[in-house]
Image (cartoon, rainbow over all chains, first blue to last red; front, side, top):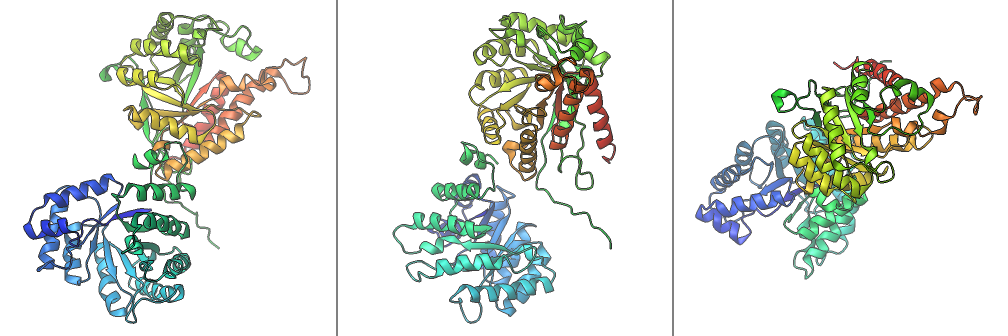
Length: 262
Length: 323
C-alpha cells in the first residue's frame, strides 16, 4: 500500500503556526519523521486559514524540498494553489484532489497530464456524496472515461470513494468497501483506489482502533493507497500485517522489521 | 495473426555481488567473479537483463571421504589428499571459475582439525590458485564458531565468500565476515521464510545486504529438486518485486548432494538396469544443476568436472542471447 502521510496540514495547530510564522523547522521535522515511519508520499496542505494560499504553498513546498526529494501529494482545492505546488514539487506528484463534476475534471485531468502527476478523484459531484456504492461507481466511471479521453492512463487515477465518520452514517463503511471492489472492474488496467482514512473515526472515542481495523478491511477489498497518520505505529503495523496476510510480502518472523528496512 | 510477447515490468533487480579481490583491490586474486544484477526471470532476454554469467565453483575438501564413487575417484583421486593440488587441478585442468573449500575435516567426528590447521589449508589454497574462494565450515555450529574466524582472518582482504550463517548460528561468522572484508552465505533449510529471517538477522548486525549470497540447503534430483526449484523461483519473484531481504544472488550446493544419491553411486553390478555408473552420477549432477540454473541460481558448487563442463555448455547457450 502507498502510505500518504497526512501531517503537513495547516489544520494542525503546530503546522498552521509554522506557516504563519515562516518557521520551516517543524515542517521539515514532520517530513523527516513521516518518511522514516514509512510514508511513500507526503501530503501538503496549507490549511483553510492561509491568507495567501499560493504564497503559502510555495513556501511550504520549498521548505520540504530543502530536506527531501520524496514525492508529494499537493492537497488543495484551488487550481492556482495546486499548479504552484506541482511546479515546485516536480514529477511523480499526486494531485489531491478533484471532485467528479465535469468542470473540475476539465481543469485537473489536463493538469495531471501536464505535470506527470497521479490524480486523486473524490466520488463527489454536484449532487454531493452518493448514498451507496453504485452512486460512487457511477462517478468513478465518469472520471476514468474522462481521464482516458484526455490522455491520462487509468492507472494514474486514484479513486477516493469518500469514507464518512462511522458515528454519522454507519452504512457508509460497508458501501465504500463495495465501491472499492467495483472500481477495480472499471478498466484494465484498473484505476487505483485511495481513502482519506482518518475520516472514518472523526469524533469517536476509539480513533486509532477504528482507523486500523477499517484500513485492514479496505486493504482486503483492494485498496491501493491511503492518506493516513503514518506516525501511528499501530496503524502501520496493521497495514504491514494485512499486506502480509494478502501474500504481498514473503513471511518471516521479523516481518514488521523487514517491511521497514525496505 | 501476429504474436505479441507478453512482457512483465519488474520493479526491482537482484543485487550485484563481486567475489575475489585482485592486487589493486588489496587481495591476491588474479580474477574476480561478479554475479547477479538480473532484472527479469532467468534468461528471459526479451524482457530484461541478466548482465552476469552464473559462476561455477568446484568443491575441494580438506579431508576426502573414505570411499569415492568410481567416477569421482577417476577425476580427483590423484590430488584429493592435498587441497592445494586439488584446487590447482580444478582451475587449470577443469576450468573452475571459483574454488569452494569445504572444511569437513574440522568436524569433531571427521578428524576434528584445529582452527589453525584449517587456516593453514585456507592459506595453501589461496596460494595455489588465483580464482576467488568460497570457504565453508564443517556444519557443526560450535566448531565452526572456532574455525571460521581464524580462516576468515588469514584470508582478510581477499573478498572470499564465507559459509554459512544460519538462523541459530550467525553472529560469529557475520562478525568475522565484516571484520575481514568478505561476503557471507546465509543458509536456510529449504524454507523461504527462514531465508528471509536470516538475512534480516545478519543485516541487523550491520552487514550490508549487498554482501550476502543466499543458499537453500538444496535437494538434488529425486531428493526434493522440484521443491528447491520452486523456492528459487519464488525468491527471484520476490527480488524482482522489490523485497530487499530476498534480493541477494543464490548459490546451490549441487555436487555434494547429488553424489550422496544411491542412483549416482551404486556400481554397475548392483544395478545392472540403471545404465553405466560412469555416466549416471555425472548426469545426475548436471541435470540437477541445469534445473537450478533455470530456477535462478547464480553460483553452482559442483563436484564432477564433466558435470561442470555440461553445465558450462548450457550456460554458454543460454547466455549467448544476452545482448
